[in-house]
Length: 358
Image (cartoon, rainbow, N blue to C red):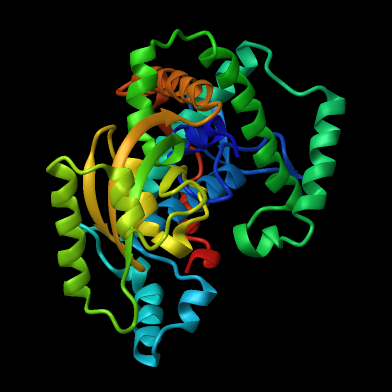
């Protein structure tokens, strides 16, 4: 997934890490031969039942992800029986547990309404600017997604038909096309790119570092190893040559005599520990620090901090998207044109958190 798409999903619809984020559906979708019920209306845009359901799902999934740490099958397999029972109880009671004096569903419904204002805005702007798929493009999009989601029971999981589900993604794709056009016209300075680089350092940094590594073996006293590494650090600060210290003390030198070029995907965590990578990617040129890792102690001397290949162009896109989305937020904020008209309160009240999230 591109950086541009990640930023779009994170801000346009206020939903982070889930697969279903975006806006949906042509309002003339037909269900069982009838026009789909309209639940709300926002600046002349009909919010149909399926649109509302999918937005509620997306916002609920993001909200739960913020407050509940969903465990993987591997994590669960490593739990004790007591930990597993506690985990299940927390999961089952999440939607009934108040947060800041309110039930999560109430909070999510408010967030959904805010996200739907953005839906209405993009719906209007895409129509105004003739941003739409051709019939051929739509057929190709539908075909690819039907294959991709062929095993998803959309009725059971989300309460929408497969056609509505695919339209959800299709409309998102159209919205992104509009955003790309608008955001690409925004000028971005080098300072803004550097500022964004610092914000996403762990994603885009390429750091050159020299390291003295002392392993903590099964028979080693951790405190003794710690004292030794800090003693080596003192030697370095008193003028000793780093290469000489690496040669004399380091128990892992890699392929370049203790010098490493570290990026997020570097495959040296088995030897030096994941804490080594995390620490190095946050460091600045000239830093000298000791890091305790899962495998031992590292004395790091940072030689250079640079951006990975293509980082500058991707970061420029992030800044452009952010600026444009902030502009949209300012248009929608306290704008009475985007106040909601309740069309069918019965349907609105009847739609709750999908079972898939419980």
